[in-house]
Length: 494
Ligand SMILES: Nc1ncnc2c1ncn2[C@@H]1O[C@H](COP(=O)(O)OP(=O)(O)OP(=O)(O)O)[C@@H](O)[C@H]1O
Ligand SMILES: [Mg+2]
Image 1 (tube, rainbow, N blue to C red):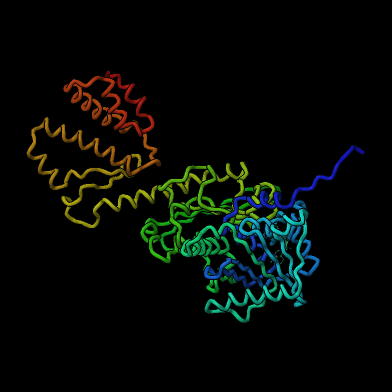
Image 2: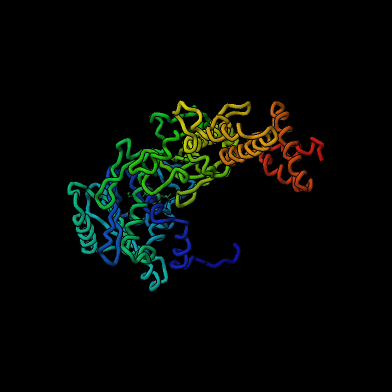
């Protein structure tokens, strides 16, 4: 036997460090709701009365509850071995969430629970008490404290109208010494936090809520589920689902493209396109659901960059807890990693959704500056035409002022004007296409482009610009087309 000493972690240091897992108030409460759902709760109640100082948060559920012994064991850091296989509908994984989520927001928390309607039991972790005892001393609440805490909870609940008297509480978690929230001194900041929380929970748990499996109330008002994939809505394009096989499991992914009208409609509240407080831009990208619970959203997992042009694109992936080790779920259950194999399998869909979303966005942009529905052509300054490489914007030659001007000009002046117009058109299309611009100078275009370049060169040379300056201008005007540099140099017009 090697020489050894017992080296246990000092509880207070350990708790402070392990609780900084990147939780926010929303992700911490979501972690507790996971527990309630895994325990079969059909009703969950979250209460925070910002008028009662010191602040307290109550999270109550009518799930199966815990026996006295289970309750003690489940307060342990961690309470279960991560390697043990879990039920297919269990949202837990680490045996930590209850403790880390609670300590991420509070310095003292109590769990009160009962099973099969047997008497409530209470257990408390309190950092102040741990400082005194310098050991892992869990407080066993006496009957009076348990009753007082339940009364306290009922009191806060009845303070809000629509109190649910028929709600059978089996487990109640109470967070005290809310060291993060207490820093938000102004009550409206706390209210902002609560609004965020409402949006977050409505999104994260929308499948449970919308299937009618659970009702979640925040300060006694029901949280509505928000479906980020409104497939059945008019104008929404769906991309047929695809699968990636890993072991015996098939992982499903599927994309949608929102219609351009969603950009304007998202500003209304309520909106089917975005939950309150969030924008389309924030909601683009890949959504991963684990056991029906949304883990993360709002980005493309570095497959492509987030951009205003992609705000109409969304893709969902469905995994279960069988896939956990491959996806590297974090303790706060707000982040995971997509395995390379799945990323590769999704490549085509990501590109397709991105291209379609960008197209839809360009249509929207065009609709803001093209005048539609007019029979008199002279009224539209900009028109959209379909060229060889897809749609392009043009300055309308029939635009009344332009038409008139041309009539007044000599041949040489008219040519100058045409060159200027075509430079403007280039810029206009670049702005319109944004980062999604993939245009190239094609064989078909090359004749016209060459003519334009030669003309620009001529005008600038006449005004004594050097070739270097002219080349810079040409690159600036045609440069976003990927092969422009090669093309300009190949013309040999120096
Ligand atoms: N509201 C609840 N109702 C019934 N049992 C609960 C409740 N909350 C927690 N438990 C029990 O306590 C255990 C520990 O919870 P905890 O959140 O710490 O870990 P976990 O859910 O197992 O895993 P994870 O760290 O992924 O959340 C749970 O596995 C569950 O058995
Ligand atoms: Mg948990």
